[in-house]
Length: 138
Image (cartoon, rainbow, N blue to C red):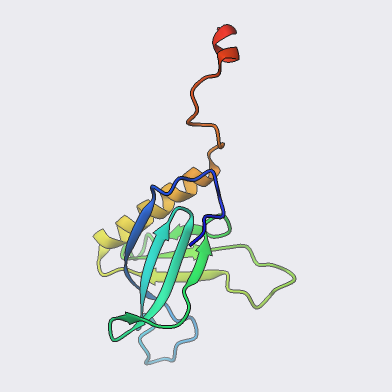
C-alpha cells in the first residue's frame, strides 16, 4: 500500500476486523452483516470484505486526506468516515460507517484515525530541529 502523503511516517498502523454498514439494507436485514479486514497504514485505511474468515475481492482504500473521521456520540462502538460530495461524480459515496466489536475496540480505531488526520495537517517540518539561522536570530 503506497503512501500518498510523504510527510507522514509509517509509524501509524492498526489492523483488525470491523463491520461495515450496508447503506441500502432491507428492513429486516442486519445493516452491519458485512465483516471486513481493515488496515490503517499511515493515512490510508484499507478495507477488504471477509467470507469464512478470509479476505475476498479487492481492498478498498480510503485516503484520510479526503475522508474525515466522524465519531458517533450516540453509539460509541461505531464511527463514520465522511467526505465532500464531488459535483462531477454525484454517485460517489460520501459516508461510510463501521462498527467495532465493542466500545474499547472502536476507541482504538478512532484514536488511530484521529492521529493520522492530525499528522496530515501538521506542516512537514514541524518535527525538524531549529535551523542555524533561527538560532542566530535568538
